[in-house]
Amino acid sequence: MPSDHVDTILAHDGDFYGHHSLAPTVHQTSLFTFDSFEEMRATVAGENDHYIYSRGHNPTVRAFEEKVAQLERADDARAFSSGMGAISAAVLSNVKAGDRIICVRNVYPDAYKLFTQFLPRFGVTTEFVDGANSDEVVACLSGARLLYLESPTSLVFELQDIATLAHEAKSRGVLTVVDNSWATPLHLQPLKHGADLVLHSASKYLGGHSDVIAGIVLGSKEAIARLTTFELMILGAKLSPFEAWLLLRGLRTLSVRLERHRYSATAVASFLCDHPAVTKVHFPELSCHPQHTLFRQQYTGASGLLSFQLKEDASVSTFVNALRLFRLGVSWGGYESLVYPAAVGYAASSAQNALRAFMVPQSLVRLHVGLEDPEDLISDLRQAFDRL
Ligand SMILES: *Cc1c(COP(=O)(O)O)cnc(C)c1O
Image (cartoon, rainbow, N blue to C red; front, side):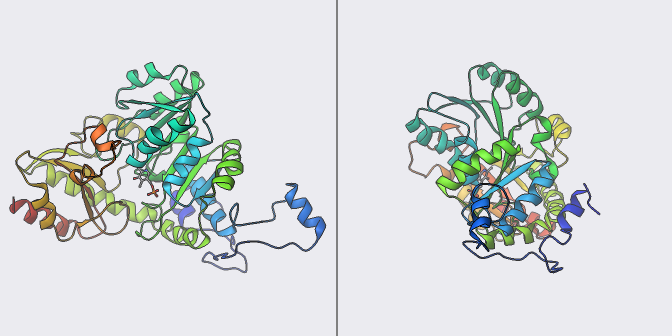
C-alpha cells in the first residue's frame, strides 16, 4: 500500500531490496556484469536500466535517491559524496562562461568560495544580495542565469520568500536553486514553491548520526539527467554504497529525531532570549524572529540549529570552554549537541573569508541542539553563562 505520508515513506520500503529482505542490502560492488554481448550492448545504448558501474549508478545509492525524491516530491534525484559535491554539480550543470549568478549573503562558507574563487576562473560571476529583502533580489534578476538560495542562511538564519523569488526568477528565465539542509524535506519542500533544483548536505539531518559525509540534488528528470551525464560522471563525486546504506538507516528516524530537535531547540532558544548575557537569538521558530510570519507561511517547523549573540563584553572563549554537553565542533544534524563560535571562523586565513565578507558578529555562537535531555542542555548553558 503506497502512501504519501512522510512517516510511512520513511519507515516502509516494500520489497525493494529483494529476497523479502526488510533492511536494505549494501551493493558493495564497483561494477555489474552482463549475460551476453547483446544485453551489454543494449544497456550501453540506453535500451534497458541494467546497472553498469558504481561511479554512475548503484542500487543502494538509488534506494537513497528514491526515498529523498519521494520526500521532496521531486521527479528525480542524484546523490553525491558531499553536500559540496551536490552544490557544485547543481551550479556547474547550469552555468557557462559569461553567466551571472545571484546568491544570498551569508551563504554556506564553502559555497561562497565556489562562487568567489572558483567560478570566476571560468568566467562566471556572482552578485550577493540580502535574501530577506525580496525587492532587492528581484531588482538584480534580469539577465542573470541562476538564483542561489539557502533558507535560512548559515549562522544568522535569514529566511528567503522562496515562493515569491522562484516565481519572479522563472518569469525572467532565471533558474532557482535552494539549499534545504536546515529545514529538511519534512519542514520545507522548495520545489512545491517553484524552485527548479533543491539540494541537501545529507551529512546533517538526513544522515543524522555524525558518521557520513554526503549530498543530494533533486529536480526534474531532465535537470538530473544532465548533471548525471556531466557533473556526476566526469567530476566523479559519487556517493559510496556503504554511506548510502548508513543514510537509509538514518532516514528511518528522521521524523522522530527532528521532532525532538525542534522541541529542545525551542526550549533552549526561549531560555537564551531571557538571559541577560544574550543580546540576540537567531531562531525563526521564535515569535520575536523578524521573519516569523514568513516562517509560519512556508515552513512546517524548525530543526535544532540556532545561534545567539553574547553581549559585547562577554568572553566567547570563556563561555564555550565552560560548556560540557555542547562539544566544540563544526557541522550539525547529529544526535549530539555542538557549539561553533563564529569568532573561530574569523581565524581562517583566506582573503575570501565568508564570515568577514558578510560581517557575521564575532560575538555570535551557533548551537546545534542534540537529542540529550533539554533540561540538561539548559543547565549546561546556565553554568557556562555563570562563568562570565
Ligand atoms: C554543511 C553544509 C553544506 C556542505 O555539506 P558537506 O556535506 O559538508 O559538503 C552545505 N550547505 C549547508 C547549509 C551546510 O550546513
